[in-house]
Image 1: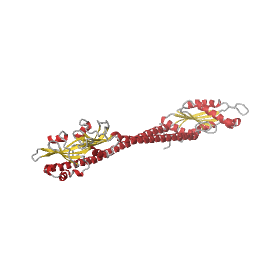
Image 2: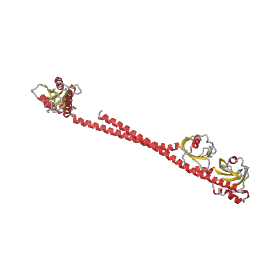
Image 3: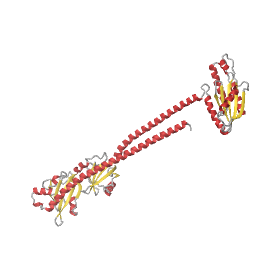
Image 4: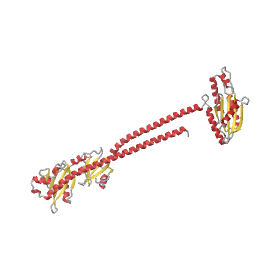
Length: 498
C-alpha cells in the first residue's frame, strides 16, 4: 500500500474514531443529564410529599385533639347543667385555639345539634341522616373522616367532616361530636408548592375518594371522585413506600408518583410530577448538546480534511522535489543519480536470481559540432527528441534509459543476455540517427551514436563494486574510436575476497 493510500485510510479511520468518540461522549453526557434531572425531580417530590404530609397531618391532628377534648368533656360532665360560659370552655377550649375549623358541634343521640363552636345557639336541626352520624351510631367508636360535604354552618362551603362517638358509662350510644374543616384550608396547603406545569398533589382517602386534587380538572378540587379502580391508586395502596411511574386516569398524563400515608387519618397524600415536564427540560439540554456535538464533529472533520489537503500538498511538493532530484530537467529522463540507484537494485536482484544483467552506454558522436550547427536552443530540442526516441525503442517496462552526461545516455536491461543487448543497442542507434534536425542554414543535420554493451552474470555474493566497473567498461567501449559503433562483451562477476 502506498504512503498516500495509507494516509487516506488513516484519515478515514481518524474521522470515524473522532465522530464515534464525540457521539459516545454526547450519549454519555445526555444520559448523565437525564439521570440527574430525574433524580432531582424525584428528590424534590419526596421532599414536597414529606413536608405536605406533615402539614396536613398536623392540621388533622389538631382537629382530632379538639374532638377528643370535646368528647371527654361531654362524656365526663353533665354539660347541660353548666353555665353557657363554662360549658363552652369545657367543650370547645381546644377548638378555640384552631384557625382551620368551620365549626365543632355536639349532637344528641337522636341527631339534634345541641352545642356548637363558634359560640352561638345550635339550630337544633336533624343531622341523623348524615354519614358522620350513621357511622358513629353503627360503628365501634373509631374516628370518622368524610367528605367533602357542604358545611354545617355554610352550605356553600365544601368541608371535610371529622367525628367521634359519645358513649354512656354502659357503652350505649350517646351522640356525636363533629368538626368540619373547609377544603380551602387544604387547598392553601397543597397549592403552596410548585410541582411543575403538569404536576399534581392529591389527597385521597383509603377507600379511593379524592378529598382534594391540586390543580383540579373541574375547578373544585375533583372532590369526591372515586379512584378505587384506577391503577395508580391500587399501586400506591399496595405499597405506599414505593414510588412509581403511571398514567393518570383523570387526565391521561404520565407521572412519577411519590406517596405518603397520613398518621392521623386514613388518607394518602400523593405528589406526582409529569414525566414530560422533566424530560422537556432534558430534551432542551439534549438539543443544545447535540448541536454542540454536531458542531464539534464538523470541526473535527474539517480539521481532518484540512490536514489531509495539507498532506496532499506536501506529497505533491515532495514528488516535485523528488522529480527535481531524480529527473533530468531538460529531457525528463531519469538522471545519473537515479540510474545508479536502479543499477544497485537490479544488481542485487540479479545476484539472487542468477540472471544476466546488461548495461549500455550510448554516446552521441561529435555532439559539440551538432550544437554549433543547430544552436543551443535547437540542440536542446534535439536532445529531447533523442530522449523520446530512446524511450520509445525500449519495449519492456523494466528497461530504463537515463541521461548520464551531456551527450551520454545509460540504459539498464535486467534479465537480458549479450545477444539481446546487442539487438536493443542496434535499435537505439537507429532511433538516434532517425531524429530529424536542421542547421541554421537549413541544411539537414544527422547524428550517429557509439554504444558500449556489457553483459554480466552476477555471481551470488558478488562484490557491489563490480557495478561501477561494468558501467565504466561500457562507457569506455562507447568512447573508443578503434571499436565498432556497437561493441559488446560478456563476463562473470567475481565473488568477494575471503
